[in-house]
Picture 1 (cartoon, rainbow, N blue to C red):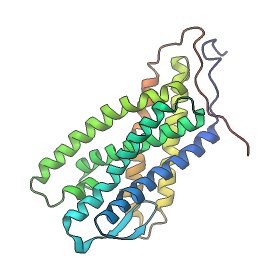
Picture 2: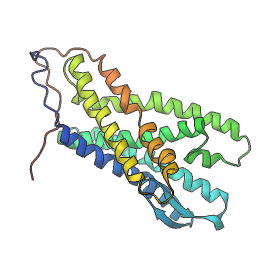
Picture 3: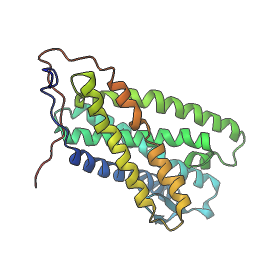
Amino acid sequence: MTSPASAHDEPLDRWTVGAIAVVAYCLANLIHEGGGHGGACVLVGGRPVVLNAIFFQCDHDALGQAAARVVSAGGSIVNVIVGALLLGVARVGRRAPAELRYFLWLLTALNLLTAFGYLLFSGIGGFGDWAAVIEGLRGASLLRGLEVAAGGVLYFYAAPRLLWPGLRPFLGSSPEQAVVRARQLTLFPYLLGGFTYVAAGLLNPYGLKLVLLSAAAASFGGTSLLAWYFSMRAAKVPPAAAGTPGALGIHRHGA
């Protein structure tokens, strides 16, 4: 039986959540590859060659190593800029429809987690955008350690604190409901978005290795905080007092 506290929580339509997730993941990837790497390529005077679902190729050979570093860093930098702007939009858009608020929240999360995750995993694995940024520099080992440290703080400390307030209005009014709803709004999009990235990556012209190093690492690795943190945090949500407004829902809207 539904408790009085949870009776006022609006339902979450799985199909709509899934559709929002696919759009948000694709858009975040386009921001990273096209807006970030592509924009940096144009900025340094390079020639855009290929924009694929999981990578961007820029002809910057004649421009030197410094230009290559800018192009490599551009994806994450633009992700952070867009994520920061979306956080500002969320603060002034609290009267927007719930579906739009959730879309903006998820897009914010994907931009920030992609940027912070690249920094962390490039330092740990020695591959990816930020490994390319420090390649050939003096003290590269020290810089790699700094990448791990900075990425860890940003990913596991800063990102949760920036993102939790935006998700909280969608969670249930009891800890049990909050966990279930958090999984629907974070774990389900994480899995669906990851499979979307990998499926799109299979169409790349360079084979399966790039899928594993780029698509799988960026989606299942870079946004993995969605898979566990928010449902874990939701278990600590205190029960709502009587008369407290219920959680926001995600509804299906007909054409």
